[in-house]
Amino acid sequence: MPSPHRGEPVAWVNAHGGGGASTLSRALGGADLGLRWPEPAQGEPGGVLLVARTHSGGLRAASQALNALRTGDHPPGVHLIAVVLVADAPGRLPGTLGKRVRVMRSAAEIHRVPWIPAWRVGEEPGSLPKAVRALAGLFPAVPGGGVVP
Image (cartoon, rainbow, N blue to C red; front, side):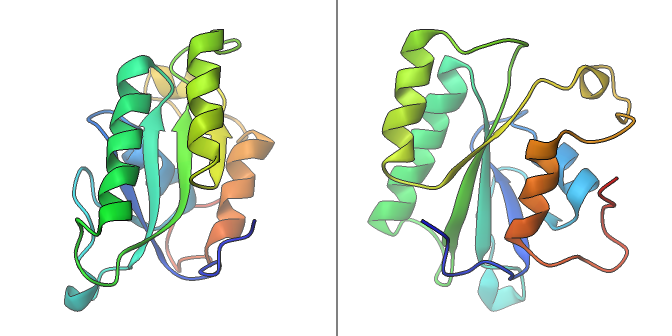
């Protein structure tokens, strides 16, 4: 189901340390807020792309953040656009983790970012995978922001 907030400025928020918000913000634009919710009253974007790795701890942190959003434990004006799950290793997810992603999908729009070897060593890939480029469709281009090759 499409988000009613598509096309608005976004804040990338990590569900846990090292989730990938900084890398995605650099690649696509948007505000990198690290581990904190945005403050729309202070002019920050209220639309959140919640970022987590696909390992057990990352999926647990994403579920906890989704619960915080559900219960209203965030500043006024904050709303989820989507959850962005960044691969923690190459290949398919183990079945137990895949099941957790499917459960999460029942509560939020989920986007998966595949393993990108260049990012692991701090380099930029020659071109971004289609799944990453598709994320740019969730928000407007930011002048001076990331470039989608």
